[in-house]
Image 1 (tube, helix red, strand yellow):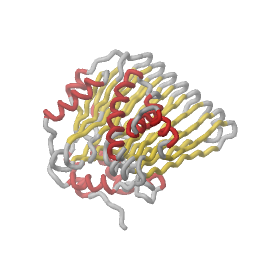
Image 2: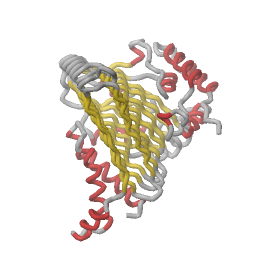
Image 3: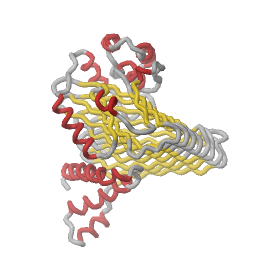
Length: 428
């Protein structure tokens, strides 16, 4: 079967309709690269389990229809709900457009927020889906943390989309830079609404200066019929620390790529994730740590709870280059299947070209422990209550790793709600 293909004529027209600003040359260059190389297919090993046909279909339908504007009351309601529930200083991107109210009024010592179109630099592209992002980008955000700055509150980035009656599509790009000896926290929250299909594509870059620290939490809680792809690329500085925790709760088709480039010694990298999938959801997490020098450490743990006919994918890779002695890299992935039709594809990978290293990986896929269920039943819990206790405990292992402690209760509440839906769908 011939792979699904983007309508390049319609895509080219859409790119030409965007403003002739400082990003225009990058858009055209990204379009040309995309036309030459195309989007990845399942023939590509990294995309073996994830076929982009659903989002290509949404993209083509969006390109060929009039754009829909999100109702202001719907947008304001969702913005208020998220911003009220999480303590942070917020920036908002709605349907791919930067909300001026938040960007203009953002004030926190040591942090500057500007638009990418104000700088005139070339957008990075060339990775899967980053071409599409750069070609159709309206504008992006640049967040700069000054050297020595340690903001007291997290920077919140809310990405919100709406598709009521016709297909929707949005692109977002965020560039974050921490100068030497700075430390900051970031919350990235993805949410959407509307009965029509929607596809969101996000590219985020994070550059860490020497001895800097970044703590990040990403929450994806999109509508059940909406799709999202996202890439986070991190470059670490000497003796820097990067901690990241991702939670995928909603969406129909989700693909997350996280790439950490450890280019300076002394870096400490930790990234963890939890994905909860039911019905016919597809959630794919691909992670990669490139250890170019040592000593440095990378640790990752991802957990999944999968029900219905859902499919979870996890592919964690660590590459230890020649000369990167002193590297310590570990990967773990654990999954719970709540139905006979649920599926998980797990693939840990280690490529080691140095001698003095410490590396490990492991993965498990199984059902709830019958002995533990029986024990809880003997203590007076119903079968449903016993399953709730075990699934929450399984998920809590990742919640407890969230680097922003003030969000633990909020995360626990959202995960409890999602688990209740999964268990109900599983007949538990």
